[in-house]
Image (tube, rainbow, N blue to C red; front, side, top):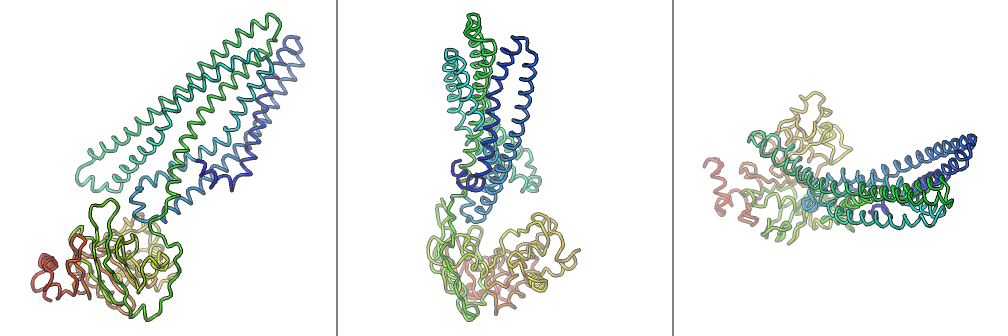
Length: 583
């Protein structure tokens, strides 16, 4: 929690924090004066039947209450500004950090956990900051001030404080030592609930298609029950605080009344002083109770802050720190080697074997490379290395003669565009989705990209055209339409290399063939890497890389591989007729 305060709260909101706590301190001073006024009302007013004094003291109490209320409102305002402002700053930086993380970092932390940290954990930190400003000054000062005022009334009765305070502290320590470790576990349980919920909502059609509502409902209830059991365990421990501390406080009040009554009889104390002593005793012990509850909130906030800082302090596995833009001449971009893989290997964290192992090839600018292989052969992993979503653990991936790790990520993304395996659109319009690569692209550029992606016809027929609405995930379009829109998005901004990772899987064969033909028309300015399980999508490429469990099983043209690569020949014959294979 300390790091959160140093980074997000104190630098920007120090003045408001000081002002708010000073206002709260003034309110506490008024609270400390109140028992003394009540004592004066009893001893000088009621005892002497002086109604005027009683009225004056009542007016003083009302004035103190109103002024204290005004100071409280100011403190509440400062607490709200600081907590909401710092929470917004934390959430902004946390979201920005998440967008900097590499896929490997996201895999390690998990999407549901990151969502929980952005929402629930930040909210918990906001609550802690707000309560800290409002209460962390009030209750300690009130407790200490009440003890001092009580001791000034009578030191002998103050012995009751010396007994009650350690007793309450002992109760507090026992409960806290057992409940604090459970707060981190509670947040982990909440992550699990978020994971199950997200999986069920995103896969609701699959769940219903396989009639697994009951099974998934049981999973959800199991996760919720686990989280509930942890919350109940914390609640049971926390529920001991108030009864135990109130019991100690009530016993202390009884002791004060008994001892004070004896002192009043012998004339050592007045009735008003006993009442004031009881009020100070109550204020002290109630303050300790509130401090205990505040510490519970602080512990929860600390657990949430640690989870937030884990993300903020994470060093992304993919970074371009220190990289400078590489000047590339026109000849390099049009006639040089566009893509070179030199004994490239890659192993996922914790994996038993490499996903890609020893891949070497060269692809000239304007060429087309097809990557084919069975499921799990490493096709998408290799495509991710070209895009530098992951860094190769062995060898080098070079784009236009330079290792991809030498490029600033912005320049690399301008050179290399991608169409992911799963078509992904965001809510907005067709125009806003197409302009991701180049926010300044004009209509002519957008329609050109749509025409190349075989999407111009259906976009033109849509109400609104480029400004037609896109719902979340593009669910108001078919699978094939979503794929064509993502292909068009990748072509906006005129990239030099485009990687299509099984990007035509939802397209019919005719549209797929027309798409490949339109991409071939850009050979003078575009190098294509086509990842596919369809032989028809790659057989016309200049080079075809055949992968088998991450290893190169073959590299060459279609005709060469038919002669030299049994795996490729088997794939071809399983998908095409013999006359098509030889065509």
